[in-house]
Length: 324
Ligand code: PBG
Image (cartoon, rainbow, N blue to C red; front, top):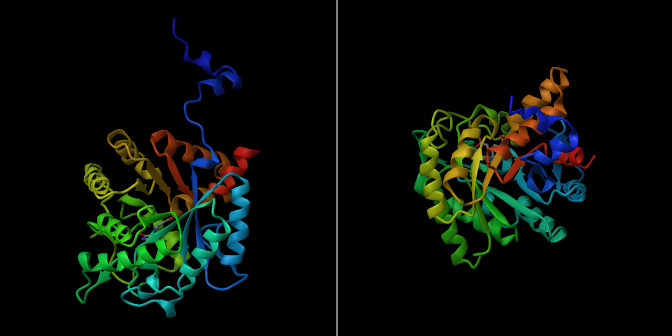
């Protein structure tokens, strides 16, 4: 035998030298759930170890993360039922707690990168990402106006990246225009480019109480059966001025990450979603698999497939492990 691949695996030093992919806390963006008020901390039942936090406690959490080397955060609002309406009007009302808190968080951590989410679902009584008409149809072009107003209100707080997660057609260009017209040409857009109609968002919808009241999201989110269609979405986002392309979920869509990595020069982000987190946590709690190893292996696979950035609820735990 001339070739023996096992020679390159014979010691830890050699294994480290030939290691092709290495995770770093700099790869991670940590999604956080923001509560109105003070001193509140409520665990998400279907996501053990993940809490909805009020601004004061979120500051503490962000500080701990920054010490571990995590500098990027994606912040979602938990919106009380009384604040919801059909048109998601709270999403762009300047004195709404989410917008006020974003400004406070950005002022407290100017060196952090803060991303916000643009979609109507957390603010909508329908629980859909767009406007729903009497027949249950999700209106595309009418929704763009709401998304534009929401994105502008978020940009005004000084945050770094806008994350449109709504999957309406033409939203990246629409939002880019609104931001540029208002002088926010430096605010970035991370588009949820290939966002699939997935069962893995369940725990997130628990966290925000944002599940659709009727129907599903299949007329705007992508069909899990489709790969080539991701190319169409990515081409559009690139042309429309997106700064990053995101694939979501991550673990069941590694082929999509790879496809976009091979065909586009924009940085690719992968969203390791709530259900993927819950799945590993639940099995680990039952003692059915080694949670730490499964977590690191899953994150590694996303990076190996080609994602530059990983949005993950494991960010803090993984950073602690990497440090330790
Ligand atoms: C809102 C949004 C969702 C997620 C991120 N932004 C839920 C959805 O589209 O229903 C899911 C994130 C996760 O599951 O971790 N449009």
